[in-house]
Image (cartoon, rainbow, N blue to C red; front, side):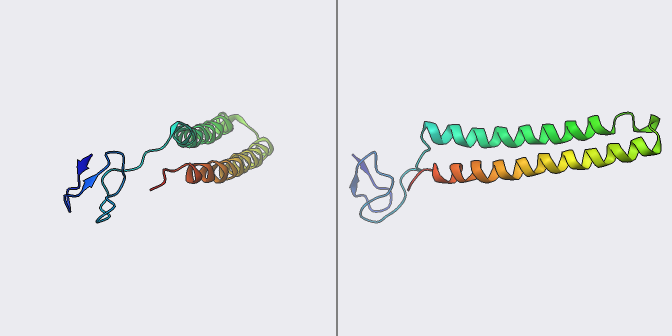
Length: 107
């Protein structure tokens, strides 16, 4: 048992809020699965940035030595590749974002 800092009532040391006055005593924490999902979401976003930057860098490499038709083809392919990466990114963020939302700690 601990004392509430607001009303000095006796409160369980595992309580998140004081039952008398409602002041928050401690923040709720994510469980192991919640932390795993949250870090998976962050890691996915970092991976997608690396793929997008790496793909754009690799696609524009050596464009000066290409003919005009090759350059146009490379630009179209780069645009399609970037669109595919961005669509995977958006779908993944929606799915993982919902999992992060549903595994957040309850107050």
